Amino acid sequence: MLHSALLETVWRVPDDPEHIGYIHDTEAAVEQAERHGGTAVLMHPVHEDVVRELAEQGITMPRKSTSFGPKPATGLVLRSLDLN
Image (cartoon, rainbow, N blue to C red; front, side, top):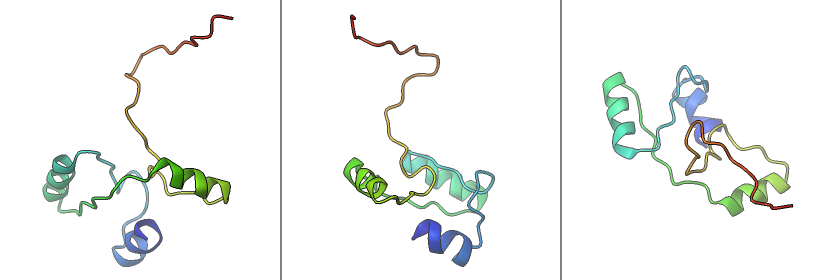
């Protein structure tokens, strides 16, 4: 509902990175909204099983709605642990 109805239709905010930020910390999101005269929308994360179910149906989710953490540190090299 946020992406399909509220952003562009009701609030008239373009759904692009120039106008929308994604902040994972509640206090920081509210602080940024207050500082810029914007709105902070606080949402529960989407569970992995919901993402899988929608993907199996061919449904594309909005940008950043599937941002899972924790993320590897920048510059961290990942290697296979397979000894073969």
